[in-house]
Length: 160
Image (tube, rainbow, N blue to C red; front, side, top):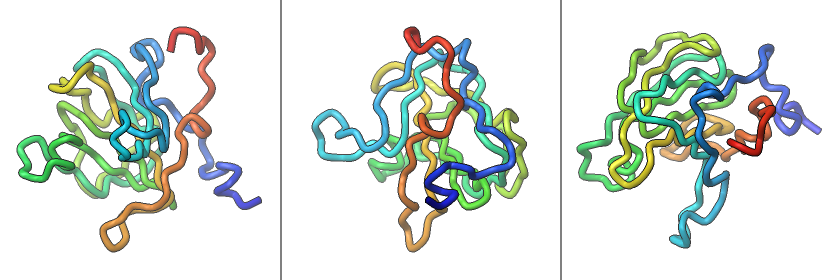
């Protein structure tokens, strides 16, 4: 079994990108069929009030900030404002943000403030959080990992 299979991927434990006290619920999980559309869901949805602080799940370097909210491409528009942070060999993606407080090439520590959750014109505000095995290569991101296998276990899993 390789280190990637055991998720021994960093010297520090992972942190939830939304503080558990703000987390209302966890929605669709990795590779779920998105509402019967046939599109896979590559992350988890973390429901919280708009303007909730978004925290870095792991230390890394900001490699991409994209504002797709006014894009003519439907995929970018759906993702809204998002940030990609390279954490060693993994990429953390934070989608549906309202405000970003970091810059490309900035180093960020685990638990550092990335920005704030945005409103969702298509439903309840939520952070779509992905962990990928690598950054975009030839326009495609690496395989999606299930963040629920990597993030610390929640103490009260009945509520969130």
